[in-house]
Image (cartoon, rainbow, N blue to C red; front, side, top):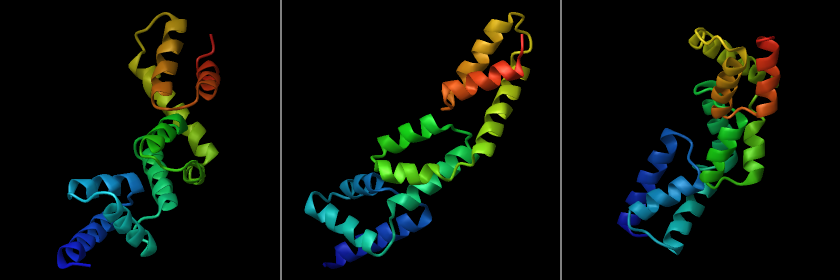
Length: 155
């Protein structure tokens, strides 16, 4: 390994230390450093062997952060993990970070928030529709959302 490769490896270790990274993010970063093909895969293999990147750990951290901080639902989280080319197994493992009770409470909180925002809406069907659309746009499953919206806003 040349000095410049050692420096780049050190730089990538620091970058991976700051926050969890997935393989595709690292690959993109290495391409940005003008590396290609087997060089990139060699760097990735080295960082995996030293446990600087771990896709399961990344998926767990990603799911936890997006759900607890940004209040995203499973649908949106899965979609974004797929865009990052995370394996289905790792996605499944990451989703285990979501507590079902907390998930339902988050949906209820979002419904309450939007009910307050749309308090001037007189038509109850339009109100339900607007609230459900908002919560589903956050990535929550339609059946769970509609069940809670109907329970919350009985007409």
